[in-house]
Image (tube, rainbow, N blue to C red; front, side, top):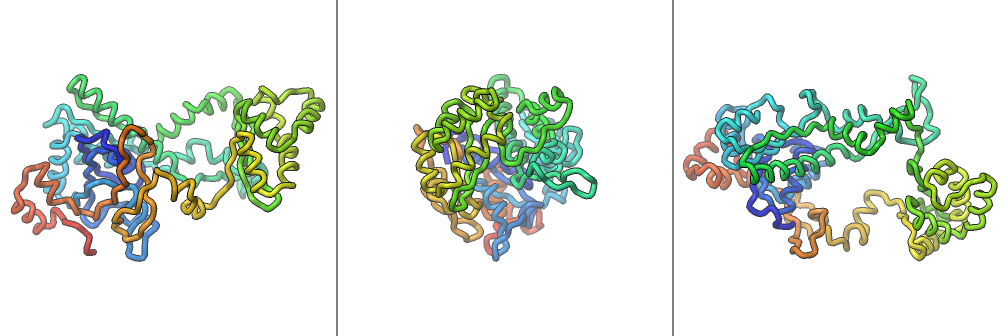
Length: 412
């Protein structure tokens, strides 16, 4: 936790991954993020995987360091409260549809400098999720083994990624867009409506990476490469004792380091002479002749145990890493248990203790506070309504009695 955004308050009405990620990143940098949920929890409150006590580990981690308000947003009175909170605060992050009670024009009608960041599916308002925009992007049909067997339709099937990458990229972009709108308001006094469609993030990333231009230039699709790196030298290899590891050589220095580590200089020279080419300074040549190079390197590593391989690679300055299971990664000292990114386990609502991630950025000149827990659902309802809307304790109590507002679910 850092305090770079101290003094900034954000109302968040979110579900699932992309929109909560906007608030998470802002909260980790010191913003006060007040998440508003439906009483009893929104669509993602019970998102898999659940602990034995019924707590979602996904919800718990996407909502760290936030405050929580629970309001009946199916009622007119509850919706008016959420609108009032957004207007009183001046910043809203949501993935509620644009034609809803949280439409920007409604919020801006009484607050001209209102900033709303809306995470959408597609830009035209159609629904989408990471899994569906990924299907549209083309990436799943470039992913997977080279020799992937055809399906019933006669073509190799798509291979989906397990990480909802577009959600997290969209969340990060949403946080950036929010800060850009804040800077604009500071300079001009103007508010902003910012719409960030998940689908545009996916197809825009395809374009920014150069892949879209590549497909149009080549007039077709890229072939599947398995675990090989596109356009450079890199792939997974297996040591004598069965450890699988990845190497990458995108620079001349990295290439020379691999040759030194595996002692294949003579084999490389012989291959260059046979093929009439040079690998020393050309990613293109290394990529085009990757199969012959892979066979040469695998022949070298196949006679060594991984500990010896790792020592050679480290000594030469090569870029490599062994494959771990996710469970192994979660227990790895270098990655987690001795990594300053993670702090001691806070008082998680689930009651389960585990390392908690802080902000990814490392700011040496600033103190890095320990990660804070996610809130219990509705634990801040009374305080937030009093602080933001000036309601008396009696007025809040009346709202609770009417079922418009709920307090903490700590006991349940």
